[in-house]
Image 1 (tube, rainbow, N blue to C red):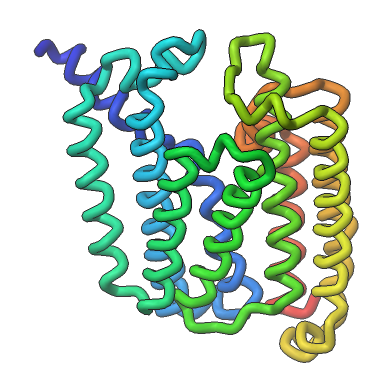
Image 2: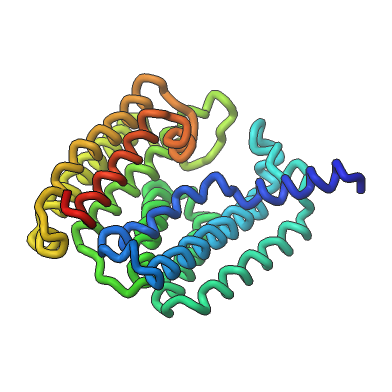
Length: 297
């Protein structure tokens, strides 16, 4: 194997891990920020360990999914270029890499509370079921994707041993449903580019649009109620968190605009990462939230 071949093989192995999708795992840090423990070293360390564990376990899910779908992907006009169907990574190498990733997850869990480990295990199991067939069941598929985001938030809470507001959990549910159905919307927009997922036949544009609007409304309403709850006001010593609601509204409406006007065929993670307005909105929301929560500004 030449140096070029070795470099290409390493790159293919990295691509198999889907590191670009690790952005989803920032949900793990929500309890850390909203419990006012961001500046506590031990809490930050455990949150980082939970984040790393979720990065690895989500990569394990992607590798397993690519192994399970390798034959179908080989016939797909775009997915055939993925590491396994393209032959850049052999099947045996993929299984070996999957085993190493799972071992890495297990090692990280040794330093985390058992409840956090249990939730990560549940995430792995439901996503394995998703890869083996549930992704073809209408509505069940998006609820499994949404459950993944909720498990991230709950794991973040258990990792640092802090209670999580019910309103924050509900907000996460609506937001994650929005992201899940947005993913289906992007796949529907990809139909003319060779997307062939069976479940897409059951998602009409009207159904997808309705779920997106309900999810957006639910996200904004539950987040607003969270900022106004007595528990939050007492915990933070201020009622100013309500001022972050317009930022959240703008961010969600901006995504809806991109989806409606530009008919984007990209994954939601890619849309957020490539749109300057959404990036600035996320930064603004984060800075304003931290300033209010930690300094009462």
